[in-house]
Length: 248
Image (cartoon, rainbow, N blue to C red; front, top):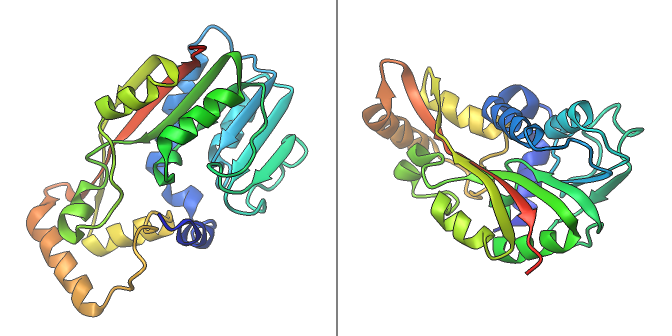
């Protein structure tokens, strides 16, 4: 996992991300809804991992009562606009490797941890940041995420299944909620799909620039395999977890 490449691709997409990230926004809304269904939405201290352009951050501010809001991202803090007076602490850096604040009541993250190198070590780290009754709520992606792209290019992240994630998470947390879904988007062409992915920074797994031949082959295969009456199909496979600190 090339973290510098990931950082640079998301920085380039920062101005277009909020408009293009329609699926990520749906995922945020679903996770917030499920966290709000818990007994309390009062959390003295909240830590967000992988805040990006602040889509989830704004929902945290709107929906939860808190005293301290800590937000983390690998990119510099220049994307928020108007939230600096609410955010207690901006923590720049790779969440896998930097020190994170302890005694957190809620750690929350959306569409970020799939980029991490060692999810197992990260879960252990988050367990140590939580208070006794702390909650860890996050989303990642499952096996069929962007399956069309991987089928044609043989490139992409290696995603765990829902059961694989449950097995890993159960080593560190008590799972109180998990859910998996598929969200399909439809585009007018395969080129529009590539544009969509570029404008959300999701192309961060590939360093090699595309040639005209690459593009032609890709569009031909997409037309053959993944075109329907609705258009050119792209699959997202979000998975949701809400976990409680395990004192074992």
